[in-house]
Image (cartoon, rainbow, N blue to C red; front, side, top):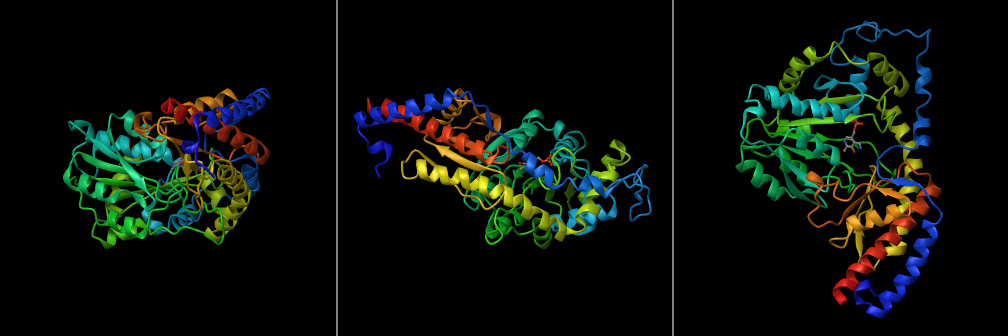
Length: 429
Ligand code: PMP
């Protein structure tokens, strides 16, 4: 099959008129489709509905500590919830603190505390002339939004199939004391679905940062979110690895049950060294008397233990897998070999990352919108919303039904083809 670049101007023009007719046909249907955010579908939310029945007005709401969960107390999480999330995050129970429903909130608080009060006794970041963060790209827009909000300068670090470009990470972190952190989604990354290799994790743990208060922000949001039982990625546990390398305090690990139970009412946690957690608790005890323990109890009693959670994730996978297949099969069938886009096939997580020809992403997203399909804004996967090549587009297949997804992907590939043809024609002229 010829790539689009290999076609003559006449061939491209005739292809274009056929594709335009198809596009007008779907556009006329007045559809409203959304592939923009990584939200679980209603069907997925329904998987956890029995959790609502775990507690009722007759329930004993006393947790393992002997505290009534309805009342104040137990600042950093009830034992049974700590055990569950510690197993989920592969850390000892004592190295975890449970928060409210959102890990993003915990990340925000972590940056805010570092700005106003510093990290374990170091100078508050707000008193420094410059604070910088490394941002593997493409990455998660809400991470970048937090650091942008606090005026932290963000530096792009390209992702590779094995994680961030570690030569660049080492060079920058080890030479510039203004670099205080790096955003990482180490497993089934948002948006590429890449899992950091053993070597990448080892190199992270071996970093010798120029700044004593440098921290790796290890957001393991998709740690147990596999699509397949027989093809799963494996990620080395970073907390232990950093400890082994003599850098126990260098990492904060974040996670939540947002895409396990409910994104609106799950539980989130941070895992870190004893010294880091002591620093965090100092602020936490001013901020709150305790988070929602009834919800913690509900989660602990519903899942029972990590095995219950893993079993539950298989039911999510059964819903997600056909959706990923629909998108990936359509991309392969419609765009494979045309030389106008590339993508990866992740084994887990929530996203598929698509790279168009340079300078086309914004136009593709705008084109899809004309036919009623909302995609994540082009550029969102880069700090400041600026993709230097204007080529990355994040596809989120979870929310639409399978039928909607089939149509949405069709609109997407039509948009990719039409914009790419225009681009190629413009330099053939
Ligand atoms: N981290 C990553 C990498 C995510 O993709 C998301 C959700 N899209 C979150 C964090 C949000 O987590 P939470 O619901 O726990 O705030």
